[in-house]
Image (tube, rainbow, N blue to C red; front, top):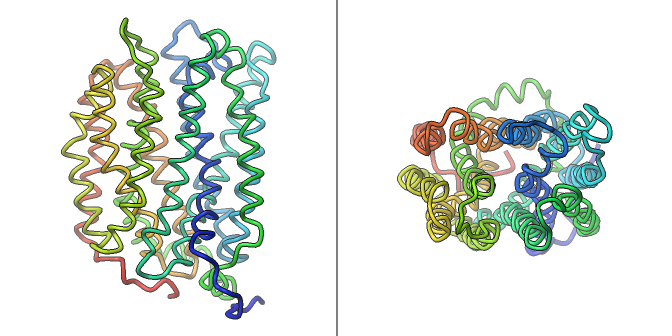
Length: 427
C-alpha cells in the first residue's frame, strides 16, 4: 500500500493553480463550442424542415453530455480516491481530448444517415463521462493543496479554467462567424474548433506531468473504505451541493450559452454580433471568479453564497429580458448584471463544496453530487429555455421562474448550513 510522502518539497501555488486550470480549459472549450454551433450541428446531424425541432435535437445532444457525468463520477471518482488525484486528472483530460477531436471528423447525416447522430451522441457521452472526473477532481486537488486561508482563491483556478475555455470557445465561434458565410459554417467551419482543441489536450498533458499528489489523496488511497456505504453516508453534503451550485449553473448556461445562440436564431435588421459581446463579458466573469474565491476566504463562503443567491434571484428576470428581447446594449447590460454575481459565486463554490465532504471517498461523492446537479440544472437549461420560448411561446417570465426554483431550494439549504471555511480537509 502507498504511504504518505512527507519528504517531497512543497509544490508552488502557481503550479497547483495551473494544474487545476488547464484541463478545464479544454473541457469547457468543447462545451462552449458545441453550444455556440448548435444551429450548424443541428443542420448536419438532424435534418428537418422545422429549424426549431432541428435546434432542439442539437440541444438534446448538448444535454446528453451532462447526463453522462454521473457515470463518469462513479467510475473515475474511485480512481481519484483509491489511486490518487493525479491519476484522475491525467486520465480525464486524455479521454476528453480524444472525443473532442473525433467530433471534428464525424460524418454527417447526408453521408452515413442515422449513424451520424448516433456517433455524435456517443462522443458527447464520452465527453460527459470524462468531465464527471475532471472538473470536480481538479477542484479537490487544488483545494487540498492550498493553505487553509487561501482555499477559495487557489480553488478558483478551476473555475477560471472553465471561463477561459468558454472565452476561447466563444472567441473561436465569433471569429468563424465573422470570416465565413452561413453555408461555409454549416459545411465545414464548425469543425475547426474541435480539431484545433488537440493543442489544448497536449498542453494539458504536458503541464500535468510530475505534479505532486496531495496528502489527503495519499491517505484516501490507503484507507479504501467501501464505496456504497460511503456514498450513502454522504447524503447530506450531496443535498447541500445541489443547493450551493444549481441556480448558479443554470443561470450561467442561460446567460453565456443560450442567450446569444437564441438571438442568432431570431435575427433582427440591426442585430449586433452577440457572439463578440458574450466573449467580452466572459472576460469580466474571468476577473471576478478569483475575486469571489478571495472574498470567501475572508468573509465566509456560506454567508457570501447566500447573499449572491438572493442577488441572482433579484436581478434574474430583468437580466433575462434584456438578453432575450433587448438591443445589443441591453444584451450586454443583461449579461453584466447577471454575470458578475454568477462569476463571484462560481469562484467560491469549488472550495466550499470540497470542504463539506469527508476524506474517505471525497472525489467520488462530490463528483457524483456535482454531476447530477449540473445535469439537472445546467445541462438542460438551454433545452428547457428553448422549449418554453419557441415551442410553448410562454415568454421570458417562464424561463426566469424555471431558474428561480433552484434559487428557492438554494436559499433553504444554505440557511440550514454552517460556515465551511475552517473545516479540516484531512478527516
